[in-house]
Image (cartoon, rainbow, N blue to C red):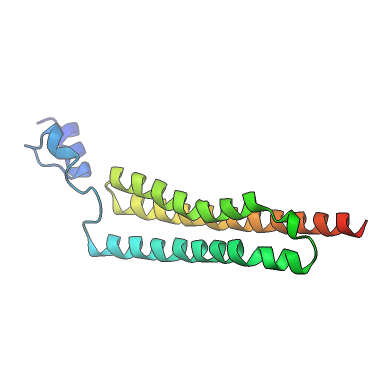
Length: 140
């Protein structure tokens, strides 16, 4: 076996007798307790973002109606806030199943969480600007 090939099989975690069919079957999802903890932490944090988005989806219409701008509820922003954590979790799970290293998997989760947090803050800022414009239009 060549030295470069030996290094590659050690890095990927394959044995010398591994076949192409067996490469994808190993390490598809969680194989270590640490990775299960990372996955549970990501699910918890993205679940929290989803809970906040659902709260906004349910509670913002009565809030807008109380201010007299009930017809101006930014539904597209509210639904984007709900779908964002779901899509991020699904996409990160696809990447999780394809990458074998623990460090790479942790990086995927941190990036997914950071993207959702940043986008959620952006959606909240856009909603506040939307509300200010609706109130200004109402005032004349």
